[in-house]
Structures are given as C-alpha cells and as structure tokens.
Figure 1 (cartoon, rainbow, N blue to C red):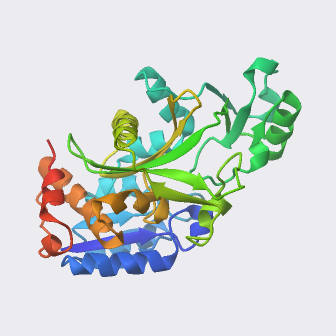
Figure 2 (cartoon, rainbow, N blue to C red):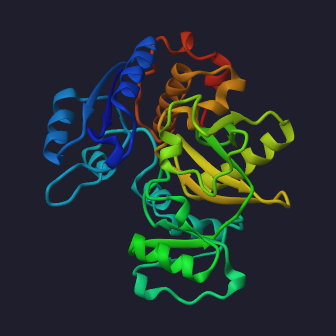
Length: 338
C-alpha cells in the first residue's frame, strides 16, 4: 500500500507540523507495511504531477490549500475531482470546522452548548455592547491552532474590545469569554465505535493565562507553561467523550479530529472549536496514553480508520499487511464502521 503525505513547506504560516513529524510518520507507517512518501505542497500543477507520478492508494494532507501567487486551490476538492481517496473530512466538513461561526451555528442548531457570538466583517461594524455582555474574546473567523490569538483578544469592557478589533481588522468572531477548565479531546474513527481520548490543559503552578496562544502550544514539550494531561476521572472522561463526539458528528467530520471544550464553574461544558486536521503532536497524542498508545500506534489508527471508511463507501482499499504488529487487534476491531 502506498500513502502520500502532503504538508506545507512553511508550517508556521500555513499550518501543519515541522518536517521531522512527517519523517516520523513515514517510519511509523513503514512498520505497518505502508510505503509512505512525503511531498511539500506548492502549486496545484505540481500536486497533480505528484499524484499522477506516484498514484497513491491514499493521501494524507496536513493542509488543505496549495500555494499560488494568484491565490490557492483546495487540496480536498482536487482529490475529489481526480478520484483519489484521502484521509479526513471532505471540503464541506473542513469548511465547517475551519470557520468558527459555521461550526457554532451547527452546534446551536443541534442543542450543543456553545458561547453566544457574532461575526464582525469590519471594525466599523462593531456594535456597542452593554456591560453585561462582557467579558468577550475576539478571534480570527477562520483558521485554527490558536493562530492570531493573544491575551489582548480578551476584553472586559467596550474600550478593550474596540482596541482589540481595531488591531485585528475584519473577518472576526466575537464570543462570550468562558473562564474554566480547558480540555482537548482527540477522536479517531467513524460510526458508533470511535476511540475518544480527552486531555486537560493544565497550567504550571502560578501560571493562569487568559487564553492558550499559538506560542504556548509551540514551546518545547515538557517545558511549556501549559501541558496536556490525560483525564483520569472515568465519569469526566465519559462526559467529555460524549460531548466531543456530538461536536464531531454534528459537523460531519470523518476519520479523526480534535475538539476544544471549556467547563465553566458550574460544571457545564461549552463547545469552543473543532479541528478537522489536527497535527500528530502532544495536544492530539496525550489523551491516548491511557490506551497504551504512542505516536506510531495513533498514526496507524487514523490511517486504518480512513481505510475502513472508504471500504464502507464501496471503494476497494488494501489492508496494511503488518498493522496488527503495530496496533492491538482489539483496537482495530473497535474502529469498524457501523
């Protein structure tokens, strides 16, 4: 089986992971008997050439856009057009997850609790908010990974809000700021039996940020001011898993994802964001430690979940010949699509 890994040559600007993560992926998939090849995404023309030359059985794309001087093209749409199977959500699901207002609208319609919000296309459109609407947080409408978010994005009065909006410009979402315990919940699979792995984002002693920024997440693992830790309380794990799965399924996501949840002082959960293309780093991996799973196992499980889904949709897909030597058989059986 041949799998093509696509990533951006500039992960800090366009998303994805450091190049060494994809080298680890290649090695992990190789253990399962998968021939994994890594290519950087540049132009649509070059991507088409790579696909025609390599003819992969499956594509894993860490980003969803090419890099062009005159704009960009959706990788998922190109793969659909060429009939090439790929890991993860389709263009509709990716859009819902990428644009925060779309995900929140879906959750509100499905009765999934999420902070009230409004979209701000231009700073000049900012309405005057009364004091009882604060605090709020201002975020870029699109994107993920906490990019573009700093502590100054949290506003406790209208003057702070206006300053944040003026600095950030248009294309924003303003939502009620919820203070509480923060969780990130990793999900692998489709159908009824998914692997769902909650982690709590735990600040070190004496550090309590208003928001967890991209810079905090990007620090060296083990020395960051906030680190994910597996949720040990069984009841809380189940509650988080149910809530995160509802977030994932309502957005129509596939194969894998990561849900961000805040639990307020009353113990109520709030859907904050969902990532349809999470990177294989600690924020996604940590929750799987209680399953006895590390990087190699998690990567192979995501790929296997995608293989099973494509089969359920009527596509012939080979089984990685050695995957049972990497991942426990009982976990592979749990991922069956029903």
